[in-house]
Length: 558
Picture 1 (cartoon, rainbow, N blue to C red):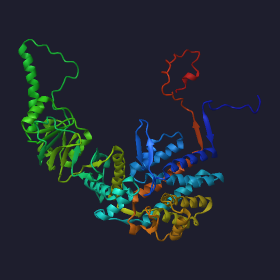
Picture 2 (cartoon, helix red, strand yellow):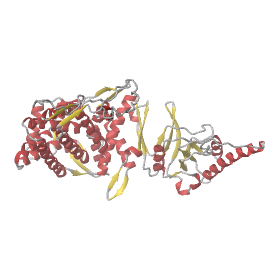
Picture 3 (cartoon, rainbow, N blue to C red):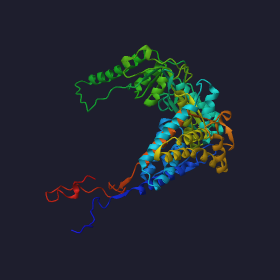
């Protein structure tokens, strides 16, 4: 056998790239993703318009919203997108910064890979840099009083200042703070937990002006009472009962046969059904409710009994909405009418009212005494505007939530990153061995954020950056950064440009960890699965194996 006969290990359909080629490809991909949303950072940011699959358009500059919409083939780029998703779920803001930072981290690593540094060395240096960066954050952060409304407003505003709704800054910031302080739950030990997804509902209703948006001291949902003519649509201080069981006669599970001998038996059957429903209603009416809300159905008969007693009823409500009502008015959701107790009746609401907005009826349960859930009512000119406002509101509420959770502040406007960068540069001289250079490079990478800010303001980037570096040189003037509006170099304390500590810390962690992860990849094997093209013919009938072809390719599961 000839010595140089090629050995085929991988199947033909597999592509394998390894070594530096992969690193370059990954870095290229990550940089490409970062470039897509680089221009959306900062108050002078550009918007992106995306056409989604169904032909609708999305106009936004929320990093996460953009990346969510685009389809990407490259695996490394996909993991970059995961980053902004993580960031969005964890802290809700800083989705753009995380990607820009991670892209920059990989960009500075490229030089070292060309010089044949081992990726693990670079990663070690990066993790060291991360630890030191977080230490710097702790050092320059300052505590904030959660109850000091103006400080909170400033904070939330700096988060939204970069968004489309910046021009209505106060409005959205107010909405966000109201909503989160309402829905906050004290966990004790000074910790506040705010579950935005569960207890804060954003209702978008096109029409009206943005200024009409408000936070309700209670909840609203898109439903009307069951029998509009007969039931009251406005009740002051209602007693509310929430059920999650149907108030109708149970149908048999499977087909039930009943043999009737006499005609009267049929009457008896019907009477039994009526009796059952009457009892159910009686159990409910015993507590003199003014409003009965159920997640399931209400039969006509039950409606009749309830409306006769002057009770308004709402049926087939979403479970999530029901939970919110429970939180808002202090009711308990009951599963079986037999188990109703006085304590389950919600009396916290001040007003139940059904209003017509536009051409739909909405039910409001408002003026609650101590609501733990709320609805934010957004009005606006068009669907697109509303969607964008909602995304901005999500970010703002997350920021407010983060501050309630961890009341510490950092300077915005790139000041934090510059301070971190300066401190790391100083420390890099004390780092021993090969790791020193990647460590220093990581320090430089942090400057990507202020640099991008300056770029988006249309400034002379080099001049501004050198000025800023001079100001930050020895780690002093920690609060000097770029005012993203005017592009001046100012003290962030005076301009009230803040960032929340948890957002920054999370941004740094996510970005560096992701950069390390992508650097550690040295081999991409693709083509493992043969996916069927959409629209291709149905898969062939599975072939029955005969002994002859038992060790054929067929055995390999697709």
